[in-house]
Image (cartoon, rainbow, N blue to C red; front, side):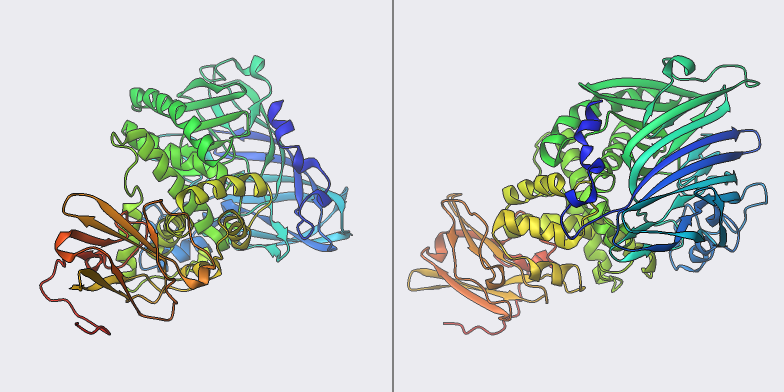
Length: 613
């Protein structure tokens, strides 16, 4: 298969990666027997684990996500003690009955055929090994488990609000990630994920009335039917066999009422759509047309989609990304369906292929995905494409959080934000603004080329912030330490102002002030009464360079970041000037856009540090 060849880098020994990088690898084989009537299933899992690290492992950890859906769990208590709990969760876990909770019960666990001892701490299973796993060696774990699917509350579960029977996300015992920083075993409280890549071979046996959509490629189409299963007598069972290569998770969903459409997107790529017949069927048909239009734009700007399938599956509680698939609620308008599908599919780039550690870099997944989604939606729906600023809503949301005094640094662990508001704004809005402002700093074409290079160089390697920073620096020739130090590691905000404009000896003098604590380069546009424009660019000395500017623009002297004031003169009479604007295309999240323009909107302007001539 073509995508196997495209992703063969993952099968090459670890020395083919960057010299200071290695990553673990997994191969899962699972056979699941689902009793839909009782919402329980048994599992037989074999896991081949590749320790590509230089370390000897004496212990491993597994995530048991279903255990979060029990009264008194950390996820339950966290939701009930946050000042702004997720409306989908609130106290719903606390109210679950015994037959509605989720759980994983481990019936047996062996390493290379020898029984292992373990302890379970909520959603984490701690396993002491009989035999250490030496550097660059493998071990095989075999596990039998029995699980109960919880009532659908967040991402996973049964009987969601739209009547989908089974939304099977975070549904199996899953080994934790081990990297340069060691094990990552944070308890599950419904935030982010981080897992090793590998291959999944999954057989799901279920009542034959059910149709299944899942990660990966169905191996036995001839057995379950070209349109997949469903509609058979419920007394029978059938087995769906899926394989997925080079992914770090596996999701599936099942419902007796699923309609199943298949759309050929390009050679070697099919999109599958699973949705209920009682939903807005025409909107789901329209969605398919929009996604076919979106894909070439996405691949041109962000890189090729390398897998052979992608499945859009009605289920869950909103929209959630998984390898080769998404779960989304389906009772939506066509535009809403397109919006959520575009967003979740863009996660295929920033989480399914690049896969930063979301616990620490959620903004590099959710934020970059939001940035890309905004551009795609603008392309699909804006009659005047491109918009001046397709990220305006993110900037407004960010400003509201800052003005409320609730912002926390982007370096905050995803689970540790004090409010859902602060987390959501940081991950989605401020994350998207990170890239929007980089356009301003290095230039739009440099950012676009940098994003493509980032994808090509770092897909399937778990990059971090510095890896991305170095890519953009190399592309642009601009140093960016200062940008990430201020924007990511602090809550210092941006506010530049035009404080005074006056005529002097036939010229126009313009006084600027940096009011906010975060420095930025500055673009100034001067518009004449006849409509002609003159642009001026002021770089920061910290940048050790400047972005490309238009031929008719003028590069001014650098603005040292410690200086709060900057003055320059232009050879234009003030009487001929219609307006002067800082950042007229709204690239920066300037906290007070009102002071960015002349003539001043206020009749009183506070002047600081300037002398009237």
